[in-house]
Image (cartoon, rainbow, N blue to C red; front, side, top):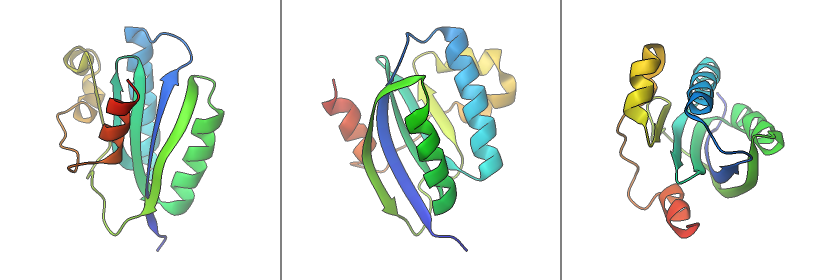
Length: 132
Protein backbone atom coordinates (compact mmCIF):
# COMPACT_ATOMS: atom_id res chain seq x y z
CA UNK A 1 0.00 0.00 0.00
CA UNK A 2 1.26 3.43 -0.92
CA UNK A 3 2.17 6.02 1.71
CA UNK A 4 -0.62 8.52 2.46
CA UNK A 5 0.36 12.16 2.20
CA UNK A 6 -1.36 15.47 2.78
CA UNK A 7 -0.47 18.50 0.67
CA UNK A 8 -1.67 22.03 1.42
CA UNK A 9 -1.40 25.00 -0.93
CA UNK A 10 -2.91 28.42 -1.66
CA UNK A 11 -3.38 30.16 -4.99
CA UNK A 12 -5.37 32.83 -6.76
CA UNK A 13 -7.54 32.42 -9.83
CA UNK A 14 -5.88 33.78 -12.98
CA UNK A 15 -9.18 35.50 -13.81
CA UNK A 16 -12.18 36.53 -11.73
CA UNK A 17 -14.33 33.49 -11.00
CA UNK A 18 -17.95 33.67 -12.08
CA UNK A 19 -20.66 31.67 -10.38
CA UNK A 20 -20.75 29.34 -13.39
CA UNK A 21 -16.95 29.01 -13.30
CA UNK A 22 -17.11 28.01 -9.64
CA UNK A 23 -19.80 25.42 -10.41
CA UNK A 24 -17.66 23.91 -13.17
CA UNK A 25 -14.61 23.85 -10.92
CA UNK A 26 -16.58 22.16 -8.16
CA UNK A 27 -18.02 19.53 -10.46
CA UNK A 28 -14.71 18.64 -12.15
CA UNK A 29 -12.67 18.67 -8.95
CA UNK A 30 -15.21 16.53 -7.14
CA UNK A 31 -15.41 13.98 -9.97
CA UNK A 32 -11.67 13.77 -10.59
CA UNK A 33 -10.69 13.56 -6.93
CA UNK A 34 -13.35 10.97 -6.15
CA UNK A 35 -12.15 8.77 -9.04
CA UNK A 36 -8.56 8.93 -7.73
CA UNK A 37 -9.47 8.29 -4.09
CA UNK A 38 -8.27 11.77 -3.16
CA UNK A 39 -9.95 13.48 -0.24
CA UNK A 40 -9.45 16.91 1.23
CA UNK A 41 -11.02 20.34 1.14
CA UNK A 42 -11.07 23.30 -1.21
CA UNK A 43 -11.88 26.74 0.16
CA UNK A 44 -12.67 29.68 -2.11
CA UNK A 45 -12.94 32.94 -0.28
CA UNK A 46 -12.00 36.55 -1.01
CA UNK A 47 -10.81 35.58 -4.50
CA UNK A 48 -8.29 33.06 -3.12
CA UNK A 49 -8.17 29.29 -3.18
CA UNK A 50 -6.84 27.18 -0.37
CA UNK A 51 -6.74 23.43 -0.78
CA UNK A 52 -5.76 20.40 1.24
CA UNK A 53 -5.44 17.17 -0.74
CA UNK A 54 -4.73 13.79 0.79
CA UNK A 55 -4.26 10.38 -0.71
CA UNK A 56 -1.67 7.98 -2.08
CA UNK A 57 1.70 9.67 -2.55
CA UNK A 58 1.88 8.98 -6.30
CA UNK A 59 -1.63 10.38 -6.88
CA UNK A 60 -1.01 13.51 -4.82
CA UNK A 61 2.34 14.15 -6.52
CA UNK A 62 0.72 13.80 -9.96
CA UNK A 63 -2.13 16.12 -9.01
CA UNK A 64 0.29 18.67 -7.52
CA UNK A 65 2.27 18.75 -10.79
CA UNK A 66 -0.98 19.31 -12.69
CA UNK A 67 -2.10 22.10 -10.33
CA UNK A 68 1.19 23.96 -10.73
CA UNK A 69 0.84 23.93 -14.54
CA UNK A 70 -2.87 24.83 -14.56
CA UNK A 71 -3.33 28.22 -16.23
CA UNK A 72 -6.43 28.89 -14.15
CA UNK A 73 -4.19 29.49 -11.09
CA UNK A 74 -1.55 32.08 -10.32
CA UNK A 75 0.68 32.64 -7.30
CA UNK A 76 0.50 28.94 -6.41
CA UNK A 77 2.30 28.49 -3.10
CA UNK A 78 2.99 25.21 -1.32
CA UNK A 79 2.25 25.50 2.38
CA UNK A 80 3.03 21.99 3.53
CA UNK A 81 3.42 18.41 2.30
CA UNK A 82 3.73 15.64 4.85
CA UNK A 83 3.14 11.92 5.33
CA UNK A 84 0.02 11.09 7.32
CA UNK A 85 -1.15 7.92 9.04
CA UNK A 86 -4.85 8.63 8.48
CA UNK A 87 -7.00 11.09 6.59
CA UNK A 88 -8.32 14.24 8.25
CA UNK A 89 -11.11 14.51 5.67
CA UNK A 90 -13.19 11.40 5.13
CA UNK A 91 -14.42 12.64 1.75
CA UNK A 92 -13.62 15.48 -0.58
CA UNK A 93 -15.41 18.72 0.16
CA UNK A 94 -15.49 22.34 -0.92
CA UNK A 95 -16.37 25.41 1.11
CA UNK A 96 -16.80 28.90 -0.29
CA UNK A 97 -19.04 31.91 -0.40
CA UNK A 98 -22.27 30.92 -2.14
CA UNK A 99 -22.12 27.24 -1.17
CA UNK A 100 -25.87 27.02 -0.63
CA UNK A 101 -26.65 28.25 -4.16
CA UNK A 102 -24.30 25.72 -5.71
CA UNK A 103 -25.78 22.88 -3.69
CA UNK A 104 -29.21 23.78 -5.10
CA UNK A 105 -27.94 24.19 -8.67
CA UNK A 106 -25.82 21.02 -8.76
CA UNK A 107 -27.58 18.49 -6.53
CA UNK A 108 -25.36 15.66 -7.77
CA UNK A 109 -22.39 17.24 -6.04
CA UNK A 110 -24.20 18.78 -3.10
CA UNK A 111 -22.47 16.26 -0.83
CA UNK A 112 -19.22 18.06 -1.63
CA UNK A 113 -20.53 21.37 -0.31
CA UNK A 114 -20.81 21.15 3.44
CA UNK A 115 -19.62 22.56 6.70
CA UNK A 116 -16.31 21.03 7.63
CA UNK A 117 -14.18 21.30 10.68
CA UNK A 118 -10.49 21.71 9.99
CA UNK A 119 -8.09 20.31 12.55
CA UNK A 120 -7.20 23.10 14.98
CA UNK A 121 -4.28 25.16 13.72
CA UNK A 122 -4.29 23.58 10.25
CA UNK A 123 -1.68 25.34 8.07
CA UNK A 124 -4.28 26.15 5.39
CA UNK A 125 -6.31 28.28 7.76
CA UNK A 126 -3.18 30.07 8.93
CA UNK A 127 -2.02 30.67 5.33
CA UNK A 128 -5.40 32.06 4.22
CA UNK A 129 -5.46 34.43 7.20
CA UNK A 130 -1.86 35.55 6.64
CA UNK A 131 -2.14 36.04 2.88
CA UNK A 132 -4.81 38.74 3.32
